[in-house]
Image 1 (cartoon, rainbow, N blue to C red):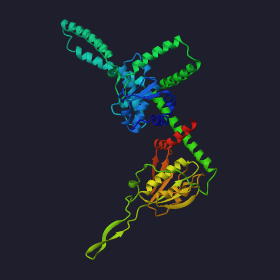
Image 2 (image 1 turned 90 degrees about the vertical axis):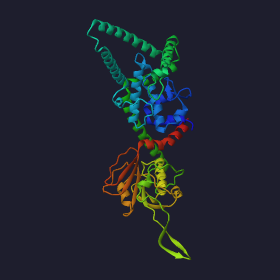
Image 3 (image 1 turned 180 degrees about the vertical axis):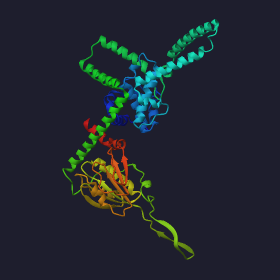
Image 4 (image 1 turned 45 degrees about the horizontal axis):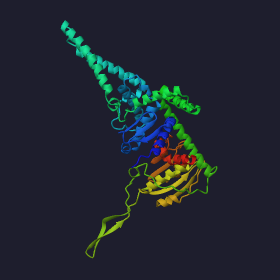
Amino acid sequence: MSTDIDSIKRKLLIKYPTFGSVIANLEFKASKDIATAGTNGKVLLYNPKFIDSLSEKQQIFIFTHEVCHVAFEHIFRSEGKDKRLWNIATDSVINALLKQDGLPMVEGGVDIPEAINYDAEEMYNKLLEEEKKKQEQQSQQGNQGQQNSQDSREQQDSQGSQGQQNSQESQEQQNSQSQQEETDVGHDTHSLWDKAIEERKKEQQKETEKTEGKEQEEKEKREAEEKSKFAKQGERETFKQNKIERRKRLQELSRELANKSSHEAGDGIQREGKILSDIGIATPLIDWRKLLRQAIRYDEEYTRKNARMRNGYFRHRIEQIPMPEAEILLDTSGSVSEVLLKNFLRECKNILDNSKVKVGCFNTEFHGFTELKRPEDIDNMSFPIGGGTDFNVAVGAFSRKAPNKIIFTDGEAPMPREAIRNVIWVVFGDEKINPKGGRVINITGEQLRRLYQSFIQDKDDRSR
Protein backbone atom coordinates (compact mmCIF):
# COMPACT_ATOMS: atom_id res chain seq x y z
CA MET A 1 0.00 0.00 0.00
CA SER A 2 1.40 3.41 -0.96
CA THR A 3 0.67 6.59 0.98
CA ASP A 4 -1.95 8.70 -0.80
CA ILE A 5 -0.90 12.16 0.37
CA ASP A 6 -3.50 14.00 -1.72
CA SER A 7 -6.24 11.96 -0.05
CA ILE A 8 -4.77 12.59 3.40
CA LYS A 9 -4.54 16.35 2.74
CA ARG A 10 -8.19 16.42 1.69
CA LYS A 11 -9.14 14.71 4.94
CA LEU A 12 -7.07 17.22 6.90
CA LEU A 13 -8.77 20.13 5.13
CA ILE A 14 -12.20 18.66 5.88
CA LYS A 15 -11.53 18.05 9.58
CA TYR A 16 -9.37 21.13 10.19
CA PRO A 17 -10.43 23.92 7.78
CA THR A 18 -8.94 26.51 10.15
CA PHE A 19 -5.47 25.29 9.18
CA GLY A 20 -6.26 25.37 5.45
CA SER A 21 -3.63 27.97 4.51
CA VAL A 22 -0.94 26.21 6.57
CA ILE A 23 -1.70 22.84 4.96
CA ALA A 24 -1.74 24.40 1.48
CA ASN A 25 1.67 26.05 1.93
CA LEU A 26 3.37 23.10 3.62
CA GLU A 27 5.29 20.66 1.42
CA PHE A 28 4.60 17.00 2.25
CA LYS A 29 7.67 14.91 1.44
CA ALA A 30 8.37 11.20 1.88
CA SER A 31 11.71 10.31 3.45
CA LYS A 32 13.19 7.00 4.57
CA ASP A 33 15.78 8.92 6.59
CA ILE A 34 13.17 9.76 9.22
CA ALA A 35 11.64 7.08 11.45
CA THR A 36 8.15 8.55 11.84
CA ALA A 37 7.36 12.16 10.95
CA GLY A 38 8.69 15.67 11.58
CA THR A 39 8.78 19.19 10.23
CA ASN A 40 11.16 22.12 9.92
CA GLY A 41 8.35 24.61 9.41
CA LYS A 42 8.43 24.45 5.61
CA VAL A 43 8.50 20.75 4.80
CA LEU A 44 6.59 17.96 6.52
CA LEU A 45 8.71 14.83 6.28
CA TYR A 46 7.19 11.39 6.83
CA ASN A 47 8.30 7.79 6.54
CA PRO A 48 5.88 6.06 4.13
CA LYS A 49 6.30 2.67 5.81
CA PHE A 50 5.38 4.16 9.19
CA ILE A 51 2.38 6.07 7.81
CA ASP A 52 1.08 3.01 5.94
CA SER A 53 1.16 1.01 9.19
CA LEU A 54 -1.39 3.39 10.75
CA SER A 55 -5.17 3.50 10.54
CA GLU A 56 -6.85 6.36 8.68
CA LYS A 57 -7.58 8.27 11.90
CA GLN A 58 -4.04 7.72 13.16
CA GLN A 59 -2.69 9.15 9.90
CA ILE A 60 -4.82 12.25 10.39
CA PHE A 61 -3.55 12.43 13.99
CA ILE A 62 0.12 12.33 12.93
CA PHE A 63 -0.15 14.83 10.08
CA THR A 64 -2.33 17.25 12.05
CA HIS A 65 0.17 17.03 14.91
CA GLU A 66 2.94 18.24 12.57
CA VAL A 67 0.70 20.90 11.01
CA CYS A 68 0.02 22.25 14.50
CA HIS A 69 3.74 22.58 15.22
CA VAL A 70 3.95 24.81 12.14
CA ALA A 71 0.69 26.72 12.67
CA PHE A 72 1.50 27.64 16.28
CA GLU A 73 5.19 28.37 15.52
CA HIS A 74 6.30 25.89 18.16
CA ILE A 75 9.67 25.56 16.44
CA PHE A 76 10.68 29.21 16.67
CA ARG A 77 9.01 29.82 20.02
CA SER A 78 11.39 27.20 21.46
CA GLU A 79 14.30 29.68 21.45
CA GLY A 80 15.45 30.49 24.98
CA LYS A 81 13.47 27.64 26.50
CA ASP A 82 14.38 24.25 27.94
CA LYS A 83 13.90 22.32 24.71
CA ARG A 84 13.00 19.03 26.32
CA LEU A 85 10.28 20.59 28.46
CA TRP A 86 9.01 22.74 25.56
CA ASN A 87 8.70 19.68 23.35
CA ILE A 88 6.82 17.80 26.06
CA ALA A 89 4.54 20.80 26.58
CA THR A 90 3.71 21.32 22.89
CA ASP A 91 3.22 17.61 22.19
CA SER A 92 1.04 17.05 25.25
CA VAL A 93 -1.28 19.98 24.44
CA ILE A 94 -1.63 19.06 20.75
CA ASN A 95 -2.23 15.37 21.52
CA ALA A 96 -4.83 16.14 24.18
CA LEU A 97 -6.76 18.38 21.76
CA LEU A 98 -6.57 15.80 18.96
CA LYS A 99 -7.83 13.09 21.32
CA GLN A 100 -10.70 15.38 22.30
CA ASP A 101 -11.54 15.60 18.58
CA GLY A 102 -11.92 11.82 18.48
CA LEU A 103 -8.55 10.91 16.95
CA PRO A 104 -6.71 7.93 18.48
CA MET A 105 -3.33 8.52 20.09
CA VAL A 106 -0.45 6.98 18.16
CA GLU A 107 1.68 4.67 20.29
CA GLY A 108 4.66 6.42 21.83
CA GLY A 109 3.10 9.87 21.89
CA VAL A 110 3.21 12.21 24.90
CA ASP A 111 -0.02 11.60 26.80
CA ILE A 112 -0.75 14.01 29.68
CA PRO A 113 -4.56 14.21 30.10
CA GLU A 114 -4.47 17.44 32.14
CA ALA A 115 -2.78 19.21 29.19
CA ILE A 116 -6.27 19.69 27.73
CA ASN A 117 -6.67 22.58 30.21
CA TYR A 118 -3.55 24.47 29.06
CA ASP A 119 -2.04 26.23 26.07
CA ALA A 120 1.54 25.28 25.19
CA GLU A 121 3.12 28.25 26.99
CA GLU A 122 1.06 27.61 30.11
CA MET A 123 1.92 23.91 30.08
CA TYR A 124 5.61 24.72 29.65
CA ASN A 125 5.59 27.06 32.66
CA LYS A 126 3.85 24.37 34.70
CA LEU A 127 6.43 21.74 33.72
CA LEU A 128 9.26 24.20 34.37
CA GLU A 129 7.92 24.94 37.86
CA GLU A 130 7.60 21.22 38.59
CA GLU A 131 11.17 20.67 37.37
CA LYS A 132 12.48 23.41 39.68
CA LYS A 133 10.63 21.96 42.68
CA LYS A 134 12.03 18.53 41.88
CA GLN A 135 15.58 19.91 41.75
CA GLU A 136 15.08 21.76 45.06
CA GLN A 137 13.82 18.59 46.73
CA GLN A 138 16.82 16.66 45.44
CA SER A 139 19.13 19.41 46.69
CA GLN A 140 17.52 19.39 50.14
CA GLN A 141 17.83 15.62 50.38
CA GLY A 142 21.51 15.88 49.41
CA ASN A 143 22.16 18.49 52.11
CA GLN A 144 20.27 16.69 54.89
CA GLY A 145 22.34 15.56 57.88
CA GLN A 146 25.35 17.76 56.97
CA GLN A 147 24.77 20.75 59.28
CA ASN A 148 26.32 19.66 62.64
CA SER A 149 29.96 20.52 61.99
CA GLN A 150 32.20 22.83 60.01
CA ASP A 151 33.61 19.86 58.18
CA SER A 152 30.17 18.82 57.13
CA ARG A 153 29.41 22.41 56.06
CA GLU A 154 32.63 22.52 54.07
CA GLN A 155 31.72 19.15 52.64
CA GLN A 156 28.30 20.53 51.89
CA ASP A 157 29.81 23.57 50.16
CA SER A 158 32.16 21.29 48.30
CA GLN A 159 29.32 19.02 47.31
CA GLY A 160 27.20 22.02 46.34
CA SER A 161 30.03 23.38 44.22
CA GLN A 162 30.67 19.95 42.79
CA GLY A 163 26.92 19.55 42.23
CA GLN A 164 26.83 22.80 40.30
CA GLN A 165 29.87 21.74 38.32
CA ASN A 166 28.32 18.33 37.67
CA SER A 167 25.06 20.01 36.72
CA GLN A 168 26.91 22.30 34.33
CA GLU A 169 28.93 19.41 32.90
CA SER A 170 25.75 17.35 32.64
CA GLN A 171 24.05 20.20 30.83
CA GLU A 172 27.00 20.60 28.46
CA GLN A 173 27.02 16.86 27.87
CA GLN A 174 23.28 16.92 27.21
CA ASN A 175 23.70 19.80 24.76
CA SER A 176 26.44 17.89 22.96
CA GLN A 177 24.23 14.86 22.40
CA SER A 178 22.52 14.32 19.09
CA GLN A 179 19.35 16.26 18.40
CA GLN A 180 17.43 12.99 18.23
CA GLU A 181 18.27 12.11 21.86
CA GLU A 182 17.75 15.65 23.11
CA THR A 183 14.44 16.62 21.64
CA ASP A 184 12.47 13.51 20.75
CA VAL A 185 9.94 12.92 23.50
CA GLY A 186 6.94 11.55 21.64
CA HIS A 187 5.99 9.63 18.54
CA ASP A 188 7.46 12.23 16.16
CA THR A 189 10.96 13.63 15.77
CA HIS A 190 11.91 17.20 16.68
CA SER A 191 15.48 16.77 15.49
CA LEU A 192 14.88 19.22 12.63
CA TRP A 193 14.02 22.14 14.88
CA ASP A 194 17.47 23.55 15.73
CA LYS A 195 18.54 23.44 12.13
CA ALA A 196 15.30 25.20 11.17
CA ILE A 197 16.04 27.96 13.69
CA GLU A 198 19.54 28.41 12.30
CA GLU A 199 18.22 28.53 8.76
CA ARG A 200 15.59 31.05 9.76
CA LYS A 201 18.25 33.33 11.28
CA LYS A 202 20.27 33.10 8.08
CA GLU A 203 17.18 33.92 6.06
CA GLN A 204 16.42 36.90 8.27
CA GLN A 205 19.98 38.19 7.74
CA LYS A 206 19.60 37.77 4.01
CA GLU A 207 16.32 39.62 4.09
CA THR A 208 18.01 42.63 5.70
CA GLU A 209 20.75 42.55 3.05
CA LYS A 210 18.51 42.03 0.08
CA THR A 211 15.03 43.37 -0.57
CA GLU A 212 12.85 40.74 -2.04
CA GLY A 213 10.14 41.31 -4.58
CA LYS A 214 7.01 43.00 -3.31
CA GLU A 215 4.73 40.12 -4.25
CA GLN A 216 6.85 37.56 -2.36
CA GLU A 217 7.17 39.92 0.57
CA GLU A 218 3.41 40.38 0.81
CA LYS A 219 2.86 36.63 0.61
CA GLU A 220 5.31 35.93 3.43
CA LYS A 221 3.77 38.73 5.45
CA ARG A 222 0.31 37.19 5.09
CA GLU A 223 1.63 33.75 6.05
CA ALA A 224 3.46 35.20 9.06
CA GLU A 225 0.33 37.05 10.18
CA GLU A 226 -1.70 33.85 9.83
CA LYS A 227 0.73 31.86 11.96
CA SER A 228 1.12 34.72 14.41
CA LYS A 229 -2.67 34.77 14.78
CA PHE A 230 -2.71 31.11 15.79
CA ALA A 231 0.20 31.58 18.19
CA LYS A 232 -1.44 34.58 19.88
CA GLN A 233 -4.85 32.92 19.95
CA GLY A 234 -3.51 29.78 21.57
CA GLU A 235 -4.05 26.09 20.92
CA ARG A 236 -7.28 25.61 22.87
CA GLU A 237 -9.11 28.62 21.41
CA THR A 238 -7.96 27.76 17.86
CA PHE A 239 -9.29 24.19 18.14
CA LYS A 240 -12.55 25.58 19.53
CA GLN A 241 -12.86 27.94 16.55
CA ASN A 242 -12.04 25.06 14.19
CA LYS A 243 -15.05 23.09 15.45
CA ILE A 244 -17.28 26.07 14.67
CA GLU A 245 -15.67 26.51 11.24
CA ARG A 246 -15.92 22.77 10.48
CA ARG A 247 -19.63 22.67 11.30
CA LYS A 248 -20.19 25.81 9.20
CA ARG A 249 -18.35 24.25 6.23
CA LEU A 250 -20.37 21.05 6.53
CA GLN A 251 -23.64 23.00 6.60
CA GLU A 252 -22.55 25.01 3.55
CA LEU A 253 -21.59 21.82 1.74
CA SER A 254 -24.90 20.19 2.63
CA ARG A 255 -26.78 23.23 1.28
CA GLU A 256 -24.65 23.21 -1.86
CA LEU A 257 -25.38 19.55 -2.45
CA ALA A 258 -29.07 20.14 -1.78
CA ASN A 259 -29.13 23.09 -4.19
CA LYS A 260 -27.31 21.00 -6.79
CA SER A 261 -29.88 18.26 -6.39
CA SER A 262 -32.76 20.74 -6.42
CA HIS A 263 -31.40 22.42 -9.54
CA GLU A 264 -31.18 19.09 -11.33
CA ALA A 265 -34.61 18.09 -10.10
CA GLY A 266 -36.27 21.42 -10.79
CA ASP A 267 -38.44 23.43 -8.42
CA GLY A 268 -40.98 21.52 -6.37
CA ILE A 269 -41.56 17.78 -6.47
CA GLN A 270 -40.79 15.59 -9.45
CA ARG A 271 -43.99 13.59 -9.25
CA GLU A 272 -43.13 11.44 -12.24
CA GLY A 273 -39.99 10.29 -10.42
CA LYS A 274 -36.32 10.25 -11.28
CA ILE A 275 -34.00 7.26 -11.71
CA LEU A 276 -30.58 7.77 -10.09
CA SER A 277 -27.46 6.51 -11.84
CA ASP A 278 -24.33 5.01 -10.28
CA ILE A 279 -25.84 4.21 -6.90
CA GLY A 280 -23.25 1.51 -6.30
CA ILE A 281 -22.61 -0.38 -3.08
CA ALA A 282 -20.81 0.46 0.17
CA THR A 283 -19.65 -1.15 3.41
CA PRO A 284 -22.57 -1.13 5.88
CA LEU A 285 -22.58 1.85 8.23
CA ILE A 286 -24.78 -0.16 10.63
CA ASP A 287 -24.70 -3.84 11.65
CA TRP A 288 -28.17 -4.66 10.33
CA ARG A 289 -27.85 -8.36 11.14
CA LYS A 290 -27.78 -7.57 14.86
CA LEU A 291 -30.23 -4.72 14.68
CA LEU A 292 -33.11 -6.24 12.77
CA ARG A 293 -35.43 -8.66 14.46
CA GLN A 294 -34.88 -12.28 13.45
CA ALA A 295 -31.99 -11.03 11.34
CA ILE A 296 -30.43 -14.41 10.61
CA ARG A 297 -31.43 -15.35 7.11
CA TYR A 298 -32.63 -18.83 6.23
CA ASP A 299 -33.89 -19.39 2.72
CA GLU A 300 -34.75 -23.00 3.47
CA GLU A 301 -34.01 -25.63 6.04
CA TYR A 302 -34.11 -29.41 6.13
CA THR A 303 -36.26 -30.76 8.95
CA ARG A 304 -37.25 -34.21 10.21
CA LYS A 305 -40.73 -32.98 10.95
CA ASN A 306 -43.21 -35.34 9.29
CA ALA A 307 -40.29 -37.21 7.67
CA ARG A 308 -41.40 -40.55 6.15
CA MET A 309 -39.65 -43.77 5.33
CA ARG A 310 -39.77 -44.46 1.61
CA ASN A 311 -37.96 -47.30 -0.16
CA GLY A 312 -35.77 -47.81 2.92
CA TYR A 313 -34.76 -44.11 3.21
CA PHE A 314 -36.00 -41.18 5.26
CA ARG A 315 -37.37 -38.48 2.96
CA HIS A 316 -37.02 -35.07 4.62
CA ARG A 317 -39.45 -32.32 3.86
CA ILE A 318 -38.00 -28.94 2.88
CA GLU A 319 -39.71 -26.14 4.74
CA GLN A 320 -39.42 -22.49 3.85
CA ILE A 321 -38.35 -20.43 6.85
CA PRO A 322 -39.72 -16.88 6.49
CA MET A 323 -37.14 -14.08 6.40
CA PRO A 324 -37.57 -11.04 8.64
CA GLU A 325 -39.37 -8.17 6.94
CA ALA A 326 -38.54 -4.48 6.96
CA GLU A 327 -40.49 -1.48 5.73
CA ILE A 328 -38.17 1.39 4.84
CA LEU A 329 -39.14 5.00 4.24
CA LEU A 330 -36.76 7.35 2.43
CA ASP A 331 -36.85 11.09 2.97
CA THR A 332 -36.68 12.55 -0.56
CA SER A 333 -37.50 16.16 0.39
CA GLY A 334 -35.61 19.17 -0.95
CA SER A 335 -33.09 19.19 1.93
CA VAL A 336 -31.90 15.68 0.98
CA SER A 337 -29.38 15.84 -1.85
CA GLU A 338 -29.03 13.14 -4.48
CA VAL A 339 -25.63 12.31 -2.99
CA LEU A 340 -27.26 11.68 0.39
CA LEU A 341 -30.17 9.75 -1.16
CA LYS A 342 -27.71 7.43 -2.90
CA ASN A 343 -26.15 6.67 0.47
CA PHE A 344 -29.62 5.87 1.86
CA LEU A 345 -30.03 3.42 -1.01
CA ARG A 346 -26.64 1.76 -0.46
CA GLU A 347 -27.71 0.99 3.09
CA CYS A 348 -30.99 -0.40 1.72
CA LYS A 349 -28.94 -2.83 -0.35
CA ASN A 350 -27.15 -3.91 2.81
CA ILE A 351 -30.49 -4.43 4.58
CA LEU A 352 -31.66 -6.51 1.63
CA ASP A 353 -28.93 -9.03 2.51
CA ASN A 354 -30.62 -9.68 5.85
CA SER A 355 -34.33 -9.10 5.34
CA LYS A 356 -37.25 -8.88 2.99
CA VAL A 357 -37.60 -5.24 2.10
CA LYS A 358 -40.32 -2.82 1.05
CA VAL A 359 -39.17 0.72 0.25
CA GLY A 360 -41.29 3.84 0.03
CA CYS A 361 -40.54 7.55 -0.45
CA PHE A 362 -42.04 10.53 1.33
CA ASN A 363 -41.80 14.30 1.46
CA THR A 364 -45.07 16.06 2.23
CA GLU A 365 -46.89 12.95 1.01
CA PHE A 366 -46.28 9.22 0.89
CA HIS A 367 -45.65 7.73 -2.56
CA GLY A 368 -46.29 4.04 -1.87
CA PHE A 369 -44.18 0.97 -1.13
CA THR A 370 -42.20 -1.08 -3.64
CA GLU A 371 -41.14 -4.63 -2.77
CA LEU A 372 -37.46 -5.30 -3.46
CA LYS A 373 -35.99 -8.72 -4.09
CA ARG A 374 -32.58 -7.93 -5.58
CA PRO A 375 -30.12 -5.00 -5.39
CA GLU A 376 -30.84 -4.34 -9.05
CA ASP A 377 -34.42 -3.46 -8.09
CA ILE A 378 -33.05 -0.45 -6.19
CA ASP A 379 -31.03 0.68 -9.22
CA ASN A 380 -34.22 0.67 -11.30
CA MET A 381 -36.41 2.60 -8.85
CA SER A 382 -37.61 6.13 -9.51
CA PHE A 383 -37.81 8.78 -6.80
CA PRO A 384 -40.00 11.86 -6.35
CA ILE A 385 -37.42 14.48 -5.37
CA GLY A 386 -37.98 17.87 -3.73
CA GLY A 387 -40.58 19.58 -1.56
CA GLY A 388 -40.94 19.74 2.21
CA THR A 389 -40.86 17.05 4.91
CA ASP A 390 -43.79 15.72 6.94
CA PHE A 391 -42.89 12.99 9.41
CA ASN A 392 -46.57 12.56 10.37
CA VAL A 393 -47.15 11.32 6.82
CA ALA A 394 -44.14 9.03 7.10
CA VAL A 395 -45.02 7.22 10.32
CA GLY A 396 -48.62 6.90 9.19
CA ALA A 397 -47.50 4.96 6.13
CA PHE A 398 -46.10 1.99 8.03
CA SER A 399 -48.12 -1.21 8.19
CA ARG A 400 -49.39 -1.89 11.67
CA LYS A 401 -47.79 -5.33 11.89
CA ALA A 402 -44.50 -4.55 10.16
CA PRO A 403 -41.81 -6.05 12.44
CA ASN A 404 -39.09 -3.61 11.37
CA LYS A 405 -39.80 0.03 10.54
CA ILE A 406 -36.90 2.18 9.31
CA ILE A 407 -36.77 5.86 8.30
CA PHE A 408 -33.76 7.33 6.48
CA THR A 409 -33.61 11.13 6.81
CA ASP A 410 -31.48 14.19 7.46
CA GLY A 411 -33.79 14.98 10.38
CA GLU A 412 -34.55 18.53 9.25
CA ALA A 413 -38.26 18.73 10.15
CA PRO A 414 -40.51 18.69 13.25
CA MET A 415 -41.02 15.29 14.84
CA PRO A 416 -44.39 13.52 14.43
CA ARG A 417 -47.14 14.39 16.89
CA GLU A 418 -48.05 10.79 17.69
CA ALA A 419 -45.80 8.35 19.54
CA ILE A 420 -44.86 5.32 17.47
CA ARG A 421 -42.89 2.33 18.68
CA ASN A 422 -40.41 0.08 16.93
CA VAL A 423 -39.23 2.71 14.45
CA ILE A 424 -35.51 2.98 13.72
CA TRP A 425 -34.63 6.57 12.76
CA VAL A 426 -31.38 6.67 10.77
CA VAL A 427 -30.29 10.33 10.73
CA PHE A 428 -27.46 11.36 8.41
CA GLY A 429 -25.64 14.45 9.74
CA ASP A 430 -25.42 16.41 12.98
CA GLU A 431 -29.15 17.11 13.36
CA LYS A 432 -30.35 15.92 16.78
CA ILE A 433 -33.90 14.56 16.89
CA ASN A 434 -36.03 13.31 19.77
CA PRO A 435 -39.08 11.44 18.45
CA LYS A 436 -41.78 10.03 20.72
CA GLY A 437 -40.77 6.41 20.76
CA GLY A 438 -38.44 4.42 18.56
CA ARG A 439 -34.67 4.39 18.34
CA VAL A 440 -32.37 7.01 16.79
CA ILE A 441 -29.09 6.12 15.08
CA ASN A 442 -26.95 9.06 13.99
CA ILE A 443 -24.57 8.73 11.07
CA THR A 444 -22.14 11.28 12.47
CA GLY A 445 -20.78 14.35 10.79
CA GLU A 446 -17.42 12.59 10.52
CA GLN A 447 -18.97 9.65 8.67
CA LEU A 448 -20.96 12.05 6.52
CA ARG A 449 -17.83 13.97 5.58
CA ARG A 450 -16.35 10.73 4.32
CA LEU A 451 -19.39 10.22 2.12
CA TYR A 452 -18.91 13.71 0.70
CA GLN A 453 -15.20 13.31 -0.04
CA SER A 454 -15.81 12.03 -3.55
CA PHE A 455 -17.94 15.09 -4.25
CA ILE A 456 -15.21 17.39 -2.94
CA GLN A 457 -12.58 15.63 -5.03
CA ASP A 458 -14.70 15.95 -8.18
CA LYS A 459 -15.25 19.61 -7.38
CA ASP A 460 -11.50 20.19 -6.94
CA ASP A 461 -10.75 18.38 -10.20
CA ARG A 462 -13.22 20.58 -12.07
CA SER A 463 -11.70 23.78 -10.64
CA ARG A 464 -8.16 22.90 -11.75
